[in-house]
Image 1 (tube, one colour):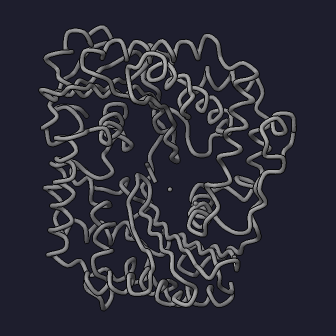
Image 2: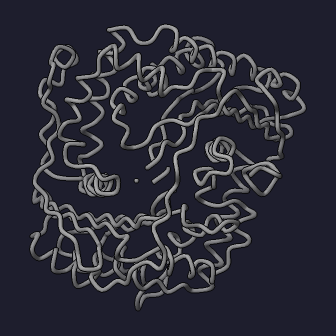
Image 3: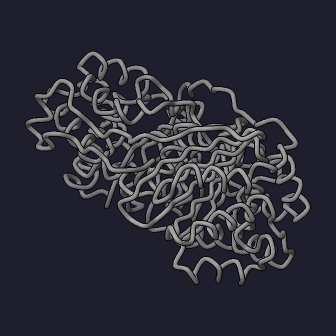
Length: 474
């Protein structure tokens, strides 16, 4: 979800030792067990995977739309809805809904992303009826209690303000996307801003719910200890009559990459550290080169021994950590580099990050680095799809993005097939050059204002501004 996991007895990689994987041209990877897929009359997609090793059942419900469906000026509507559907649904108020989950040791949580609202649940197999009932109530029969809405909205606003006041590290990506994707739907804050949240009323959330949720938007995946025929009947009875959404599924067009540099300086007076974000348009979830992109990013900024972390933390001591990564959505989202440093080390740290990006483009990856990245990526993949919940989420991800089981079954083969030519091509095409970046810095402007002008035209805003984009930004 911005910023959207399948299940069963997994066949782990054969020859997991690093040397064996490096020499094996077509390693046998994780294989998805059989699953059943069907569609209800209202358009809801069901994916069922039996897994009888433990008496647990996990469920993932994904509703297409998410923050893309937020009305202009009402950003955060989807996020507030995701919180509110957990605060009372069906015959249960907020306390009774929470008690129903806790009384059987279950788990249920909802969240919103750029392109969807998701709800995950995990219960003992004996309580699967209650799980389906609660998920259906949350999605189809939310209570929209005014008092609970007021609490949810107030907490959302206070959480943003608290992060700005203390450690804004978790917010810099939101600032970065807003600065990179100016005027584009991917630049709108998924959780809203202080200003937009203040303007969202309960009636706005109800209107969003009517327009942007419905059975035709729903993907249901269930993994665990059940019989598929019984579960299909349960889900059909619970969700088959959910009406269709009142509006078309919102979608975003691809955006061209940023040309040149532009700098956003967010003034946090008295800050002892500068947080910085360097980004450009990256690659989508379905990009054919995503295996090569993952391997290159692993070496560049995706693990502790990466180029970025080695330079900024291990060698220079300029930061406690530096990383890079691709956000994966239906259209190319951001590729970003992020780190932080002491205020008086700002220029040294940003310069070193840019120089490391230049080194990636100049030198690429040698054979040893590529082999190491393959071993690391293949070793890290199986634990991401071990549990029922992870598997249910991955199945939903496959349907959401129009992929098939080969997304998992052929993962090891795709990784193994990446060669020097593919690495070179993806660096040139998918990784930005240092002269073409949207740059965001959060720090004490009085201390760094003059120095950061070297990176490009500077626009300023204050950390206390109630938005994530400067005044006048499209």
